[in-house]
Amino acid sequence: MSSPYGYSPPGYGQSHNPYAAPQAFGPPGYSPQAPQSPIAYRAHGGGLKWAYLATLLGGIAVGILGGIIAAAGEEDVGAAIAVLGLLAAFFGRLVFALIWLFVAWDAVPVDYRVTSSGRRVSPGEAVGFMFIPFFNLYWMFVASGGLADALDYMSRSSGSHRQAGKGTSLAACICQFIPYLNFLVAPFVWFAFMFQIDGAAKALEQASAAGAGAGAGPQGFGAPAGAYGAPPAGGYGGAGGY
View 1 (cartoon, rainbow, N blue to C red):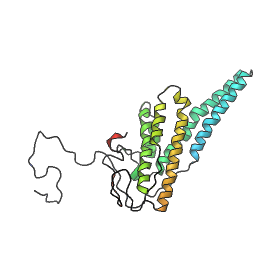
View 2: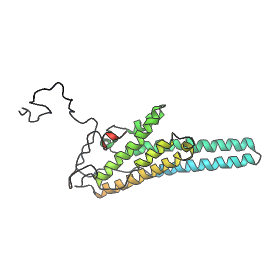
View 3: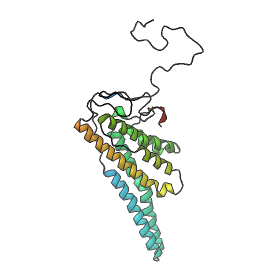
């Protein structure tokens, strides 16, 4: 039996079985529409990651200098300089990191600000939720990994094969939970992630400007050759994402 509206939802015209498992009707999460033309994308400026690195290394250098001064006999002055240097290295850099996170998400077209699990993320949410105690321990996975998801999807859709570094973001997040690594290693892993994101963003901008995505389907999502295909229901990577 066919529907008078020309479309039959699951189970239309069939006898109802009260013991049957319920059928899903529609995608469980948001998925961006398949692009019908090259994605217009303009990469954000890459200077913020270098400001982040300069603040990190400069703060460490000032901290070491303060230690040397303290060892030379000027303990009060040396201690003050060392504290200022370490504060800049491990906290001042966060200012540049959060600004970078905002502009990186802001560069993503609105329709593609989606994580692999289908969660929409705005630039304000990406940064603002980082200030929520305890929740930010979860959110850093979403904000960083979701950014990589969005860039990877757009890159495949535009013909670029540059990876955005989701694995690096995962490694950086995990380091945040490990004593000593969270101060000694994680800051540099985050820089590596920023470097990969900026590189993928620049490659995407070049592919978009060259029209490399015209008529080429997203690679890795099962799209037929020569045509665009929508990403799986629930986001770029299915239910396995954040």
